[in-house]
Length: 79
Image (spheres, helix red, strand yellow):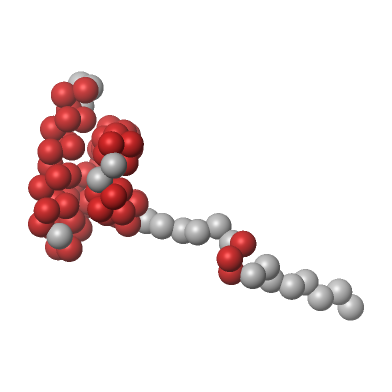
């Protein structure tokens, strides 16, 4: 009889949603994090409205910054 043990939780890959990722990056507000959000906006156009609504429900300042980043993303590409 072979017993397979589950690895400790600390070795499992962490999981986060796109909403959480954007929220964390906005909270950190480092230039690289903001650049990452711009790339996320450019590659996830279909998720923008959902992220926008999520941010409005948790933190108005995050929603305002997200709107600014949407404008920057549009300026950088033909969005």
